[in-house]
Length: 134
Figure 1 (cartoon, rainbow, N blue to C red):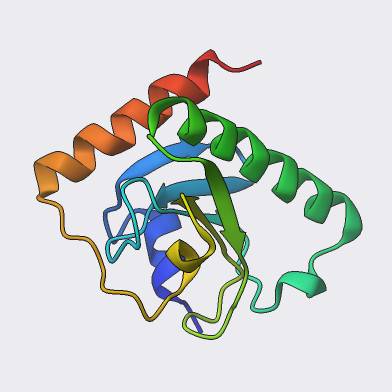
Figure 2 (spheres, rainbow, N blue to C red):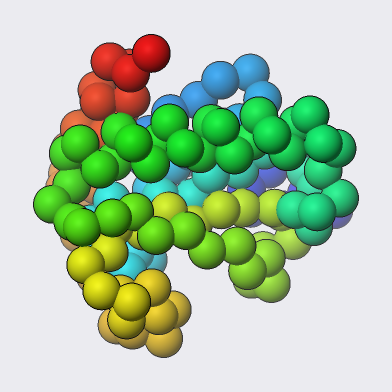
């Protein structure tokens, strides 16, 4: 069964794209915990992150690392937190969340609201930083 993330990959649902390669896609969470909250997914639909083969798993986390480094360059925060929960959408995904304290990574916190134009600006800012990284 196709997930909402698979529909984003195929282009039938739009997203605020942050970074992409042949295998992975990073885009802004539309219900973010903080400015720049990004989801990183494999393009191939896989429900459980630990079912991903070892090589792809390594590449996945290296891709997420590069996205996180780009985020840290342009978002005012102490660190980029990471969470893998995998219950809300049956498609493996990593949450990258700018944090200043441990409580910032609490998914029961109120979500931050942005306009479509603000989402576009945030995504472009992270993408520009991403493209400058080796």
